[in-house]
Each structure stands twice: as structure tokens, then as C-alpha cells.
Length: 99
Image (cartoon, rainbow, N blue to C red; front, side):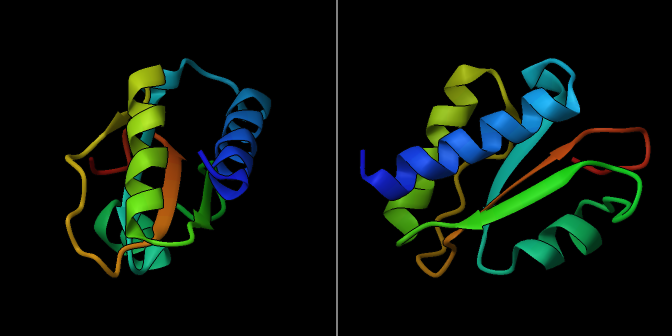
């Protein structure tokens, strides 16, 4: 794992601990446009629901980060195979969000 991977995973895990809830209550995904994915596709309320995104070096690194978080207990979709998708996003699932 690169330092970037470790740092992104650490940032996400710290954020999730701070915002509370079991890991299974958090959704992780990869996108070339994480804001669009969060707020349009998943209907995450920007001001009410915890969310975070970071950019990996490349798609392969983003896949490894998502895989690590899924193995730790996060919920999420199948790995996005778009080679331009480098944004890793997470949000806390609520009745308003769409998985």
C-alpha cells in the first residue's frame, strides 16, 4: 500500500469514528465525480448527512482503498471499472439516501 492509500484510509476511518455508527451504516464508492455521485446519484443531503471524499493517485489505488473498506465492514457497490474513477467517497446511510 502506498502512503497515499494509507492516508486516505486513515482519513476516512477517523471521520467515520468521529461521526459514529457501525461501519455497515456507511457506504463507500468510487467515482470520477464524487460530488455528483454523493449528491445526485445517492441523494445525500449535503448539510444533514456525514460524507467525505478523497482522490487516489489512480483507479487501481482507488479500487484497493474501496476493497479495504469493504472488507472492514463498509457497505458499497461493486467496484467501478471506469479507469477515470479516482474519487473515493463515503457517506452515512439514512432513509433519505439511495444505495
